[in-house]
Structures are given as structure tokens and as C-alpha cells.
Image 1 (tube, rainbow, N blue to C red):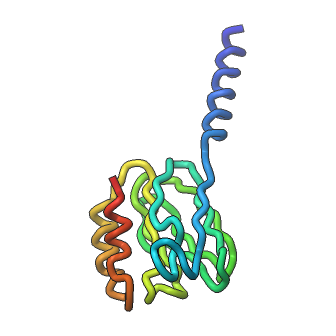
Image 2: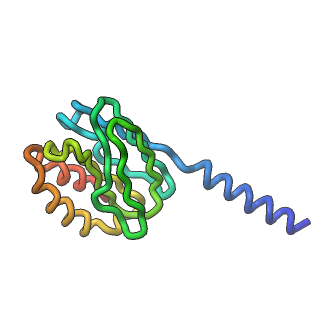
Image 3: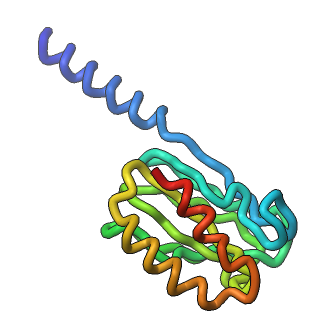
Length: 146
């Protein structure tokens, strides 16, 4: 009888873990609260196991990872297509819209503790050299990482 109780407990615990994972939506926009060509929100904090769904609210946007924590899988979506990415590792993820990178269409995801923050900051500084406008966008978003 004790064995059955332990199995039931483990099964219930597993189900609760799965049920607690969330999906957070990030819109790909021509205009948003942070200006033109933005992901909204541009910074999010989620938990390990959560899924981020990038939604092309306006057409002609795509999304690709730039810098990710060790052990995480990079991603690249197709133009004007939604992309869902499950966050498997703690740390800071930087991503872009390759089509609009010159306009600094970038974003930041923090998953749990920012284990790779120094690497992400260095990567963002180097990557921002590609921007023709909104050169401080990564700084603004990374300034929210805690």
C-alpha cells in the first residue's frame, strides 16, 4: 500500500510541475510602446520550462536567437510565422528580428537567475554596432535584468 501511495505522490508532483509551466506571448510589431520595429514586451522574465510564443502581429517579421545560456538550443523562425520556444536553461537570452536588425528590433528574456549576464552584456554591446537607430535598446532591456 505504501508503494502505491509513493507512486501516486510522484505522479501528482509530476503533473503539478507540468501544469505550472506558462506560455508568455511576445508580439512582433511595426509600432509599439518602445517605438518602431519592436518586440512587445521587449524584456520578459520567465521560469525555466515556460514557453515564449513570438506572434507576428504585423507582417514581415521573424525572430532568431543571438546569445543564449550554455545548454540552451538556438532558434530561428520563418518570416511572418509564429514561433514557440521552451526555455530550458536559466540565464539571459538575446534575440533579434533579422529582417529589422538595423532598426534594433531586439529583445531580452531572463529565465530564472541571470547566470550568463556578463556574456549577454558583452554580446549586446558588440551586436548593437549593427543598429542604425535605437542604439540603446539592448541597454534599456538589459537594465531590467535582476
